Length: 339
Image 1 (tube, rainbow, N blue to C red):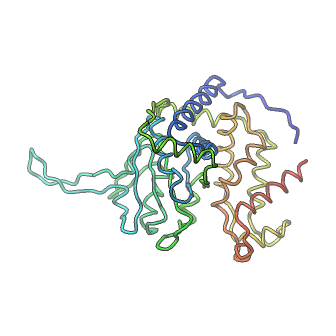
Image 2: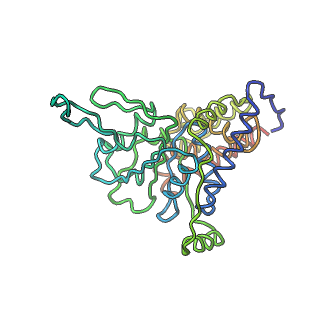
Image 3: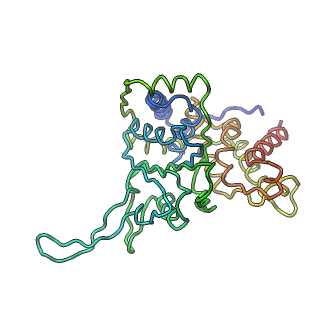
């Protein structure tokens, strides 16, 4: 698809360039500790620039927790980690009111004891190991960036991100995330095994006494400024139409012009998917040194934005058809139709 590049009239080019340079510095810091996983780290950065949350899925031992902690240190963000377990209660996440006696008056009063959610970067480790009631304690924080306890609302510090992990194996004793909870995540990121060379480098780094030192290279306020810059990136009309065509094509309807979608998809993505795909594409464009969104950005981010927003039919699952297969087919057909 050949289209003229739009002029970034409302975008502050200098701020956009500072964003790209800052993200390059963050990646350099993370690379001191984490070997490889460049695509995963890029998606985490895109999510943060887009003011979104990430769900990371991968088998144990792939440095998911280390990656998140390292990212927080390189960005000078406050960091808390919650290990989700079956006995975890909502108050263990949000905090609770406790009775304390005033040392001056002797009167007892309710004092709010803040939970670990009051941070800037929250790692929800193995989020699917806790019941839905406890998982739901994160919903308000993720969507509204606030917590309500005892009828009183407390604002969370900005920027605020939730990076959750879950293990695709050992499903016994786990609780699948409700669809409403999954939809709050901008990305579902698949963390894969390292290459042979990367695994060799991991051995070299972790079996000696040498430890790299990290330097915070980005502040929270800079991230907030970068999030505003992202929203100023122009969205060409043909890219907007591609997003609409892609997201709407994955919704099963009685009069579907693409029959295979009805056969493979039980439930498709909602409007939030379109919004977040556009924001993520704007962030990716800036990271790659461009000041407008292209169709390549949409194609590159379609899977992480949409894979957790699709519910495959039983027949699709029985045939071994994955959500990524469905998304890839939809993207290919859309690109082919517009050539």
